[in-house]
Length: 401
Image (cartoon, rainbow, N blue to C red; front, side, top):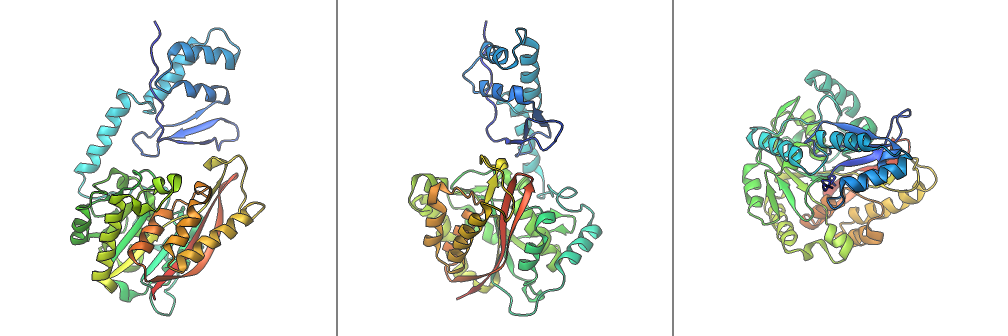
């Protein structure tokens, strides 16, 4: 008797295999419920479509016969299903247990532990301090900004652009409350992830801006103790750089901004969603009241182009079609720097954001909450994250108009 196959999780990372002698599709868990990484051989990739919750093991066998040219494929099918299940990549009991364990671990932790230390940046405090100091250099002379936008790309790929933003921060900013707006790569659209947990890095543990967090936690669009904080790098990288300048116990309000998907794909403004409108209003009231007691930090990347991001073409930084991407990026940056939230968002909405700017929601959130901000572009860069895919990013400083 045929049995239905469980659904393949849609919140996994899928990308072409980066291993030359192992072609196929690489699958990993972006939410880190599972540590497994699989490379599915090309002949089996199309068979993954059978794991949609509606097809059976008999459908899978028929597909495998077609794709492999073999008549006895039962062992291949059972192995594929077993590996996917054991990895936690199917919507089944194994996955549910993994998810429950990870959520419980985050909920019970007193701190938001460093998720990327030892991989994206050194896990040893002294090594990290030496690395950051050698890359950032000394603060630049001149007035300090009221906000910066910096990348959240791997620091190894974006040091120059990180420096362009963070070198403008002087020691007089030490006692500010740092409002860090990060891209929520894995969070719910039209929602804002908050946490009362202090961020820990190899440098030490931050101080929680508890009063500001509680003020926002009351908003219906806020997700308190959002699990996405435990894995998200867009805020963690900013915390590392801020601590390297001001010390570990900086006072932080971390906010993960979910995508404004309704607006991008259905039209209208993000604040046409009542929850978004209320949250933006609350942030605006906070800015008006706190003023210069806050320093805003945006952890944003910009365009994502090439095979890794679903495009049919390979992308090379600063070459061929990426020159046109740079011009479109510059148009959006110009609207940002002018404080033109509406004009910026109109550009994002074109072609349902075919540039795939993963920093668009933090940017729009900032522009609406701090309408008096005016920006200066310090550096723009494109970087090949792999041989066929490019990410663009920029360092920007903001002053009050």
